Length: 236
Image 1 (cartoon, rainbow, N blue to C red):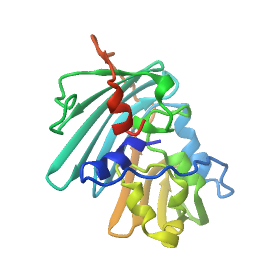
Image 2: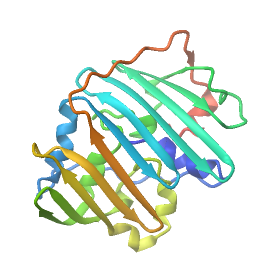
Image 3: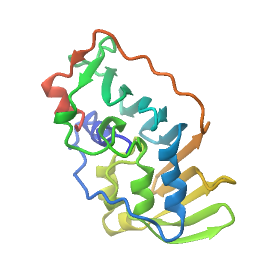
């Protein structure tokens, strides 16, 4: 899933509260859309998710267990960039942008997996789904298929994070957050290639491409342990 961190940071940079925790559920979709998202776990691909708050881009090889991703968010005059790499279960992050200790972009930090309590934070997840598309698909309903296009609604109250979106703000929509229109496309092999979620005043678009392309990640040298205060700030 894509970053519980992003939902929190988009709010934190504006002095708002971090997004509340929500229930995660990944279940098979009777429409078959889940299969199109689930196939992403079987090979490498590139991803990009864009929203008003910013963008989340990267590559993952779930079989080789490597991830190379970057998220950039902006709130008012403040901007933040988070680079994350994972190499065979060991994750590192680098922070750039905020006038705070540890955000100078010059230091890689090693994340202690035992201290990560929020699924999807920093794009790290047991099911190797950095963008959270499997949970998003599991929260869809009233889904209809027309050729290679799916349309329906998604219950965003069941989604921890979706790209750089501030999920806390989506929750403020109340009951409307339970029926947000979405559209998804699959290729000739039924692999999901795009998803558009039409959150009011903040349409979020994701693309998936370069299936099977090699993902090369250099493990950071001389990484330091992630400071205690950053676990909470990053929503870990």
